[in-house]
Amino acid sequence: MAGQEHIGWLRERLQASLIVEPRDPSELLEWLEARRKDVPFSAHLIPLRDVANWQQADNGNITSATGQFFRIEGVRVKSAPGLREISGWDQPIFTQSEGGVLALLCRETPDKGVEFLLQAKADPGNIGYLQFCPTIQSTWENLRGLKGARRAPFAECLDASEDIRVVYRSKHNEEGSRFWQKSNENMILFVEDSARLEINQSSYRWASLSQIKAMTLLDNVIGPYVRTVIAPL
Image (cartoon, rainbow, N blue to C red):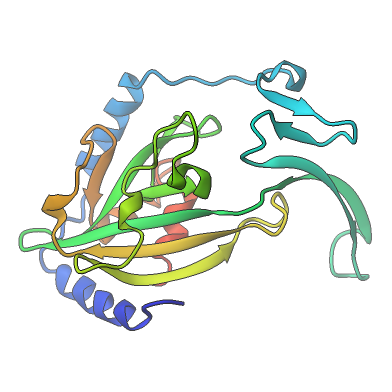
């Protein structure tokens, strides 16, 4: 874990923030619902054989034609008696050469206290498509500027600088029932001068920790990675 001493500092700032920070997430929820209606995004299931730009190798593994992103391979499991429901099984599993980054940018203002920058991110498997996700939720390919795709916003903020305080940085294992030995780097980054950030107001909103906690009690609003990133706080 990097910058562990800054977690205590941010906890103190969050405690002080309780006096002024907004707690009601209504405005954020109204904004998200409006974006869900306005964003031209749709998804539906199709036969796997009809998926474009993906291919099946002679051994049956499925890969992207670009050689990037994840792959679908097979895994054979053997388990000690009583450790799992059965002693062994075969299954498909996602494999990936490297994980990604899940990072929340935060700031402090006099009138609203500590705020975190949430991204309204669209993913095909989401209920409602758009959900509030970390500021940066990206593979390393996109952070480096994947050929044919724009570089992930705020990628330049991932390293500590005079204006960026790394509150914490640690790796967390992705769900092992679906992903083979994949970990994501979780980060909270405090921005001393948020005015320098170029924020797309149609995709990002600032929210207090109280508002985020309130929205985690609602169905299909807060993406799961937000919960993992704020857990140390």
